Image (cartoon, rainbow, N blue to C red; front, side, top):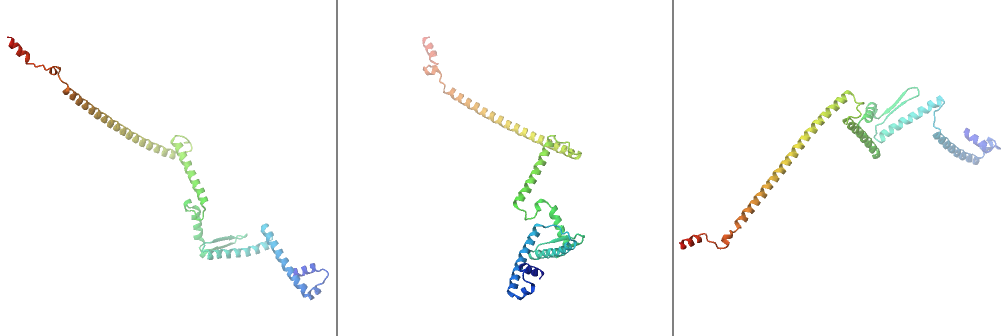
Length: 250
């Protein structure tokens, strides 16, 4: 009513209050005008409130605002818990240190334990709502860390960057090197044995092939010697003929 009277006097300065009240049309017009101005002014105030969100300096106003907003926040937490079947835990400390809290089914400790497990669990157990791009970022970070560890181990095996290793790490590295040398020697001996065995098999195969060639050559030579004819037999020479001729002459 104060705003209305103020607007009325501002709009019609030449009339007094009694004259305005006698005119129903003017009253209805002023009521409509005051409603529009109130809405516009309220929107401006709300707009300014959004932009100029800052600490309330007046203690009483700050306490009243805290009480109202706290009640609304607790109500919203309860609503989202019931409507969306979500586990909600809300903790509020006032400027004086007073605690206000809300939790689904009054299970604040259980929800906080779940929150701790979520934070400190392995990266593979991260919530399902993580986007695919974030998963790739995590996977890349894990692989990068793994590569760095492998490169450091490689340098250590090569005898480099040993200054940062403790005595226990050096002993472990020495044990690993001894085991690696033993494994290398065993594999080398096996490779040498396999190589010698392969050479022996190859040598035996060459000997067998050589023997086969010799036998084949001997067979060919024997066959050619049997086919050779004596030249005296070719001329019709009879070895008993000279003896008979000599006997006739005597």
